[in-house]
Length: 444
Ligand code: AMP
Image (tube, rainbow, N blue to C red; front, side, top):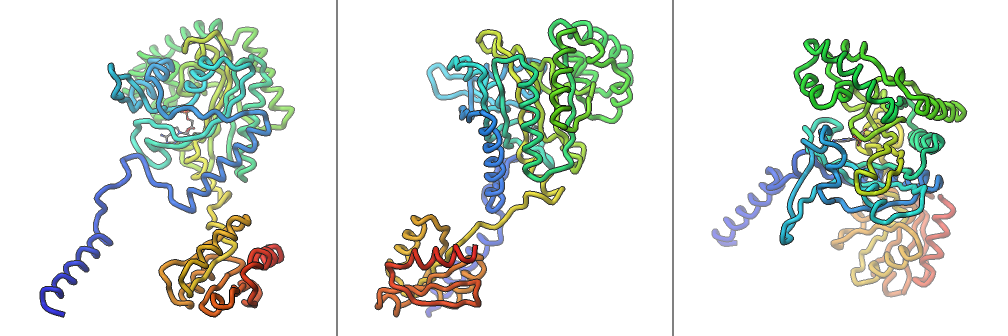
């Protein structure tokens, strides 16, 4: 090797080493992250478990766009921080450009779709997917996060509230979680709210000097939201505040009693939390939250929801009641880790194809076995038999299929039972599927 080519080799090595150990040129944007396997598979399983429960309860999947006309979210209310401070807004390339926003939640999209398609009621929808909020990232709080949820539109029946809440409860149970607290409250209705808001407003103003600076600002915009504050200095004021349940109208009190009776008969464990108001402004009557005792307070809200009777109208439809919830997938998985349930597991490989012969036979073997419904992995790059067998072992496969030059010449494959001390036999290629499925069935 001449000197210039030696330098070229050294240069290449350095470049490769830098690429391997150096800082990547790009990272996922702040507040977002890559979900890698096997974690991504766990999330899919979680959504699958939710879909299963929701569909058995008569909810159908709504797939709505990830971005909407900005106005859709503005209808959630001007006192709502998700709308005023956290929206990812942009203009498209239209003439004139349209103001759009990435969805920060899905209830508004469900109501927009309801108005657009006028389905028969009750309209029972489940959904899943990423949401976007420009929040300060921290543990359990991201700018892109995933939710699953349900909405029932078109019924005032308190049993619809019970059905929705109970679905959340059973979902957490199905994951194996048993330290989720359900908090329930009623926010009353348009008749019972004004006297309460008046009482709350004058109470909070009378003690505003004791509130945090942020809560004093919130008080100017929306006194109800002050009750949402988790800041320690606000807690003494909040704990003495008047509560909505003391101001409920007859109809709202009756509705709340029916919801509680439904939860009681199902033996659902819950606590009445008179100061639970939740973030969004459009809630009326039933409101609830699921809180994970295994997580730190700052991120322990794993989901919540409630009844909203004005949102469809805000979006241009006829007055239509709704009840629903959204659960945060990211935080539920953190809770699963904290409680040691619903663990991540490696991909399930049933068959590993080892190819030392080259040519296309391994390509065909993989395809044939996968089409027969088996999960099949293989090695690439013509590595040694020993190296490929090692990978087969590590993959956890039940069977390995070995194709060497002998097998290629004879039109056979070697089928090895990885569990039975490695017993193996040669079979004609035509019998591959039968031989493999036989062992898989035996060992499963
Ligand atoms: P919300 O739509 O605000 O009622 O939120 C419902 C659930 O979504 C919350 O209880 C959280 O579990 C989850 N969530 C909300 N915001 C975030 C975020 N920025 N990052 C991760 N999860 C979130």
